Every structure is written in structure tokens, then in C-alpha cells.
Length: 201
Image (cartoon, rainbow, N blue to C red; front, side, top):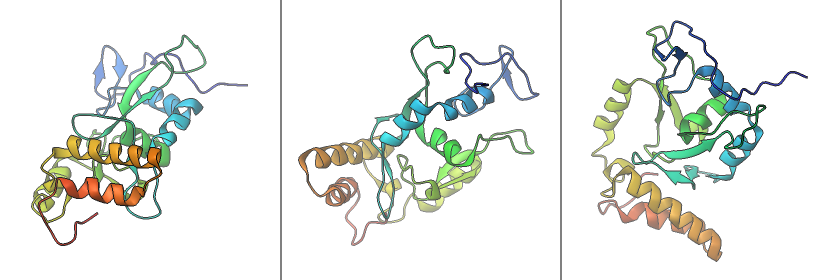
């Protein structure tokens, strides 16, 4: 049986931007072969899914660690010395989830990897249909177009991290206490927004 896991990044160069002789992506500084191994690592996949709060409608929120940008953080791989599994790396959870649902990201004709954007503007959202790819410029245009829209997550006074942490904590608390999770999400989402008749999420 052939294993698809690798313990360390391979020493390969594929014409992409390099760092110390390795082919690196621009999102999380991991070789593409290592990304493939992390996406195939069953324990990492299970850990990822356990931290995504899924709902019939609306955003699926990340309930794990949150970065300064409001995006989720996931420890992928193993800390153990296991030659059959990739080593431990902390990655952006939405980048991991996007690739888990659609395959390893590949460079475009311009030589750059696409940026994962959120059509819902929720940095901690993990609903695959809310993700789309684009460029840094596309992301900047999204922000400029929607950052003043009443009810938009981009208008939250807590910033993306504060908003993501508040929603995550509300979900965790409501589940632990057997409370209405949807109401908890609504309250946590609305708390940092300017007063509007109907928040957009």
C-alpha cells in the first residue's frame, strides 16, 4: 500500500516563488505537496469539521482559534514524530476548508495563487458556497463597495476579530447551556453594528 502522507516538505522547486529551495504557496507558506498531505490527513479533517458550526441557512461559523484578522486558525498535521503523517502546522482554517472542498489551490496564469474571499463578509464563515476566489484587488474592491452598507459585518465596531470571537463565544455558550443558538448568533452579530432595522447576514 502506498501512503500519500509526507512527514516533511519535499525539497522540490516547480518554477514558483521559492524560499530556501522549497516551492511555497503565498497563503500559508507551505509547499503544495504538504498542503495535499494535510488535506488527506484524516485526523486533521476530523478536527477541522468538529470546529465548524453548520446551520441550515446563513454562515457556518468557526468555533476554534481566531486570528487577528478574524479568520479561523487550525492546527493541521501531528505534533508526534510519525513518518506516516505530516508534521504540525497552523494554517488559516478557511484556506484549509476551501481546498478540502475544492482541491489544492493552483497558481493562475499570472503566477499568483488566488485569494479566498467571503461573499458574506464574515471573516470566520466556513460555508463553502460563501467562498470565492479572486485577487487582493478584488478583495479591496469588495471592502470599498460594502464597508458602509448598513448591517454589513464590515461595519462592526469590534473589527473582524472582535466580531468573530463574539459570535464564536456565543455559539459555544449557547450550546453548553442548551440555549437558542440562532438567537445567540443574532445577538452577538448585532451587538457591534450601528443600529439598523435589519442586519444583513
